[in-house]
Image 1 (tube, rainbow, N blue to C red):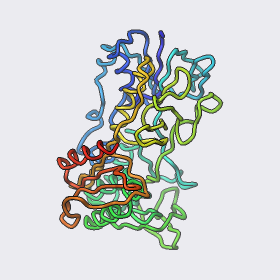
Image 2: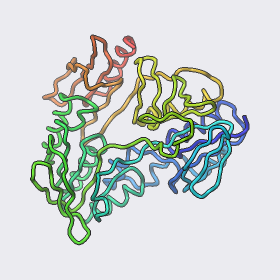
Image 3: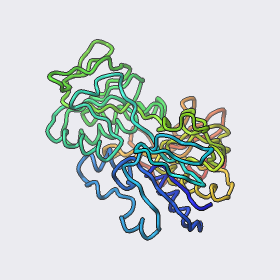
Length: 385
């Protein structure tokens, strides 16, 4: 194997490329990214960068010289639009083709959009540095923000904007914020957290229309007939795996790039990070994980398996969210049908450990402002794995 191409200049893509070097691969590595920025850390975008505490240079994962030192070739502003697995070549939007002997797909996600309204000024999504800088600039001259979507991104951005002094409203059709991630019990506590900080939380109601005047958004009309005035709107209704370019490639796509337990999607083709759906042997099911730690761990696993390790990737997923002065962190696979029980602390006091069980088996542990205790709880989860 002489040429390995990594599509996606992401945390997963960079980790994969660096792991190839550490594992002794001394031939050509090309890292291809569609943004003009070198790989950077995404979690701070909705928090430190949006709030202005950090500038964008602080989230760069490596310095320019690091790429030269490791002899990793980088092509930025290059969008992959096609893959020929028979010819082992990736086609780029500029018409160029990159041949490979081994390929790692780490293209991540793209924001899910509303059916209409995104042409209005003041309507934003947030996935990239450029998205975040544009939103931050508007928040600096605005007073009312409506966040559509109460998942990780929506809740974190709402908290950042509230701390900047904006009047913030969160809208979501589900019963509680972050209910898909944590369930009703913890979702209800997150709603209380935001309301306690002065945020208006409108759950159980959807968005009918973004209302504009002279080409700029000025309100959000909800499905119950009510209307919320807005200077700025953030659409944070989830993301979609960036897999369109894989059509007719021979790589199976179903809510991401479908991989086996070793992260292999096709002969010589592996996937890592948010875009990868793989068979997790510990859980006994196909899963896809959109969290930062998984991007790093899976990038390493995909690289090693491409080089012949043939080791199943079966981590205990770890994820977290910081909102205001509250840190919520969890290990495991917290499914919506899990039973939740508080095992330590007290939600009323703002500190607790919760266990998530399904069919009597422990499948996840969550800590609300108890990071040290979470590490102990992880040990219990590992025993039941």
